[in-house]
Structure formats: structure tokens, C-alpha cells
Amino acid sequence: MTTSGPSPTPGSQKKPTTSTPSWTKPRPADIINYRYLWAREAARGIEEGAKARPCLVLSVDETPSGTVIFTTALTTSDHTGANSIALPDAVKEHLGLDSSSRVIVTEYNRFVWVGPDIEPLHDGRIHLGTMPSKIARQVLSALLANRGATQVKRES
Image (tube, rainbow, N blue to C red):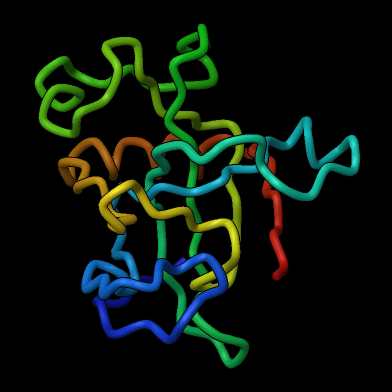
């Protein structure tokens, strides 16, 4: 996984009709609103995440087929320390996350930007904020160390 900086993004099916300057390519450590597809759902043949949720952008790769985004979910479900990383209270408060939010480190989604599963918030934004780089690196390191991490490849 490599990274790249932000740039303007072409139109999207789910993009609101009003002007949304926040629709630029995300950067690693950005938190985006995305319909994350859990590996267990993909294994059952489901093709779309049940709901949009905050997701941490792990990597942004420029490829001949487009900009590929790697992201993992933030969740409030009761996950163990083996499959998720707890966030410090100050980070959860700064990002406006629920007090029980954790970052999953056992699976991730891969999709081509912009993708139909990006979902704007009520104000049209998709970027919720940026994870502190130290935590983003910790999550990426945990995922890379987890050789059993499951990739869910999303194609639009």
C-alpha cells in the first residue's frame, strides 16, 4: 500500500446535488463515512454494507484502474483486544465518536475511489476528521502483522 495526497474527485452516483468541496480523495489517517462490508457479510454473498459508519483510511494507491482506497471500520460493538484497538477518550471526543468506539484490525475493505458506498453526512461532507498519525500507524501495523487479516475487495 502506498499513499498520495488529495486531489479533486469526479462525480459520484451518491454525491449530493449541492456543492461539496470535501469530496476530495482521502489521505491515510482520514476518517470517512463509508458503507463498510464486513468479511462475514461478504462470505454470505452480501455485496453492500448494512450501514454507513466511520472508517479509517489505511492507504491510498494510485493504479492504472484508478485510486484504490484501503479502509477499516470503526465500531461500537464489543470487540476484543485481539481484533481491535481501543481509541483514547480524547481522540473519540475530538472526532465526535461514540465512547465505545474501537478500530478493527482483522479485516479491511479495498475499493476504487469514489465508489458507490461513500455516503455523505447530512451536511454533504464525507470526511469526519483525521486520526492522529501515531494511532493510524498503530492500526496499520497491527493489520499488517495480522497475516490472517481478511481483505474484502469491493468493485463498483
